[in-house]
Image 1 (cartoon, rainbow, N blue to C red):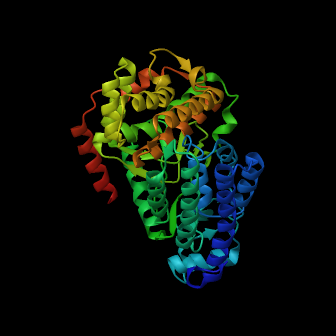
Image 2 (image 1 turned 90 degrees about the horizontal axis):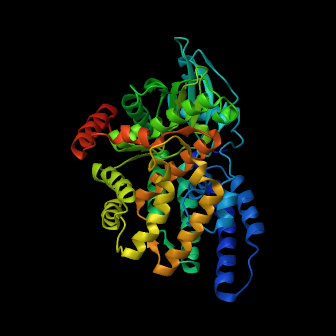
Image 3 (image 1 turned 60 degrees about the vertical axis):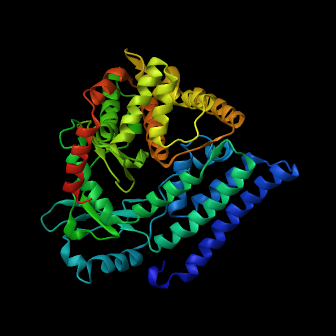
Length: 443
């Protein structure tokens, strides 16, 4: 694999491969819509997943994100894209040596006591190698694949084509702001120096949260395309699906706090609740990993999220409309607010009842699909909606974490834990905490 300086051929090949896949999809969707040609969606969606699964880079990550946003793409495609895994074949040792030398200098191996040639894990934008520091500390070296900037440009251009064609096919959800949000966040994920600051940010804001660990940064071994931190041991949370209920509840509560203490106390959210981004330690506490996708919200947006909760709890449509406006929704009619409340009611349902309960009472997969279908039908009827940028990763976090809680079959008083988070909330206090945290992290 060539490095950035000599990758024109690879870039053109990527445009061709991705363009063929997306162009074929666009043509078939257009044919179904305008010419009445029946599209075998299930078969073509499987072809799409197979094509994307063979590509490293941002399109895999985009596909995973889209699978959590209702009606951004047809359901058949969402089902296939949701199956994309982040584990991709790793780059070989010659590539790794060149990349490490480019980031740390010709003497990079003398700056470490050890470095494993084989990647410990490989994902969409980079791969991780175990290493040992000169002081004996075990390290994780996250090394970015070559030419990711060009890959982002190529993939987002083709994604724009897909969105444009689907927008002509179905006007229930307008996706311009979704595209903008995905593009900005993905470009940020390529900046490992920024991710290093996010790592510092999360170590600060989660320092006093019980049961959650964030690895320590090693800045002297990091750069814009290499992120080095302490190695943390842990296993996938899927291994605990048959654990005793008490332990499953403990894990669920730790995950709940890991995502929502930062949001409701600091206006900051980890936008990627993917299975590879957290592990369970031997003492059954949680490691939180991968801080490339972090979203910082204005305090007024967080206030709007709480306002919407209160509006749903009191069934106050006017209050809900004001909350949606603070989220960035525009041109709201009473009918549109009532449609949006269907989806919001599904997301917020576990928080509305002051009792111990399982998520699957109202938030299981079948009910979620039925709710999404109903929302889509109603949105088409009332003329559609433009999804604001701020919605994208909030919704992704809620759906992603919900799937974790469903997997664990956790039974908690979600209402009480949520009330603890928002008790005494004020935009002024959040703004002060946020400003301090961002200063600590150099953001």
